[in-house]
Length: 178
Image (tube, rainbow, N blue to C red):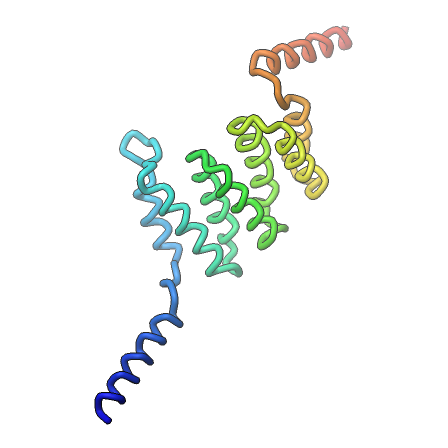
């Protein structure tokens, strides 16, 4: 009988531990993780960066009502962009749009995904265009809507071609002023 009670008690304790799940992260935990993110020379410590990004993401998931949750989710996305993890970056962007669509970080996430992940890293101008257009359509009043429109105009061009277009545009504006 004692053996059965002891086994039931152990099972209940184990079940209770499973029910508690992961430790609820605090902003203090994130600040400690952030301290490990950069090396002395201010470069990202790529060995710990994925773990830090995961903590940021977990905090946003665990604390959706915290006003800083969208910021931490955006930081998780930034880290994944730096690590050139396109799939995770896209996943985090979609989570931002689903959980925090009214946040100032939502249009920033779309811009980051379209310009840096799809265009610069993957050279996928079709997905870059669609993502930047989504920013313009969804957040037309965002200060990034104009930047997204310019980025669409420059998709697929080399830096030299972009510079040439900018210089031509400035030259035409100067001629119009004369």
